[in-house]
Image (tube, rainbow, N blue to C red; front, side, top):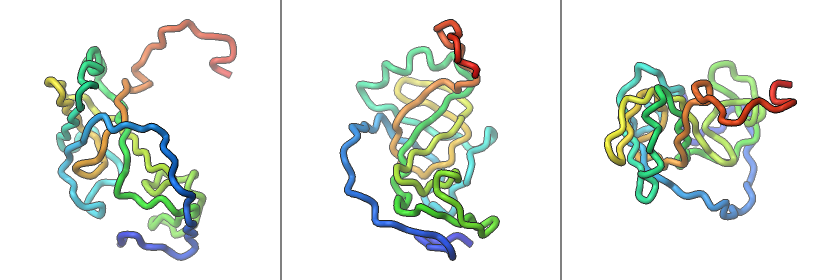
Length: 161
């Protein structure tokens, strides 16, 4: 059983340096059914519940054209996550690994990403399936799923090396 803020055997926590302003701006809020980290899924599913993303002004105009994509990448700030573990021990196998080798939400900069199924856009509300974050999670960005995106520029030497 996972416990909130638990330090498992062989995990290592550090005192992080003081935060500096990276200039991030929350561009919206995400509404999901989950209010508890222990109930939140570890990965979103394409057949998961409907979730609503509210995009704040002045960013609503940036949604123009997004409806052309069946899937979008949602980037969000995992504001309820720890930020101090450099080694983590997944409950599934009990082996400690470096944070950067895991997809855990516990990160120095807890940025979450999900590939979500785009259900619809109505004004500032983007409805999707496939998220795995808590209700009220701050939104950082929305992008077309890179596997559906056709680059504008022609391939350049070295692109596929």
